[in-house]
Length: 226
Ligand code: CA
Image (tube, rainbow, N blue to C red; front, side, top):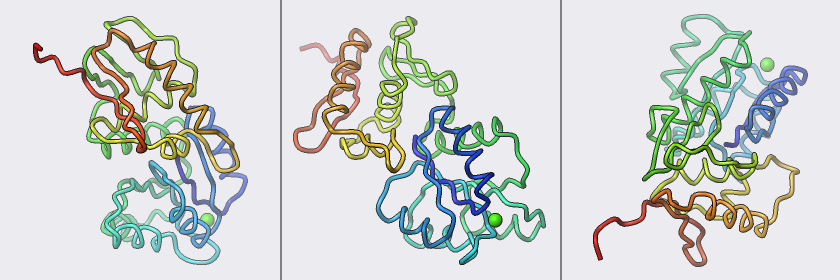
């Protein structure tokens, strides 16, 4: 899952980025509204952590920008502004969560996971497709109750595909979901992860189907007889 942190306090931005990368998120940082809008125009993110007091414009402009375009990307406002009017304005504009600094990193990450789950339509941190089960908090996958041995990247690819079931996911989307800017990952590498995942999830009643020219789709094997 890829997160955009919009924060002009570089020390805080770096601390959040380090802790979230450690927790398995791909993270990019923008320090101004302009920079954030530029990144949002060109890259795919799964959620935003948004400061309000930014050097060029107000962070609210980003929420407005997204909602005016009907983009449902989850936004968590993280700010020093603790007035009720600010909270009301943020939530009314379409932010999904409003948190006043300081916040423990563990709580920030838990809130982000909850927002992302909700945006994917899965309210629980545990979900299953066929006999494949994913625990998005523990970052583990199981087939018929047996834990799979997955590398961090394999987990990230599987989690992304499983969060987008019945939708086609392109290789580019997968690359964006599991890497931050400046990190290189080739389409060949994605193919290799998918190849390995396919053999690991064998017997789970789910397959990763190749949709020629478009990407991949994780789906339940049709169980209807013949
Ligand atoms: Ca600030």
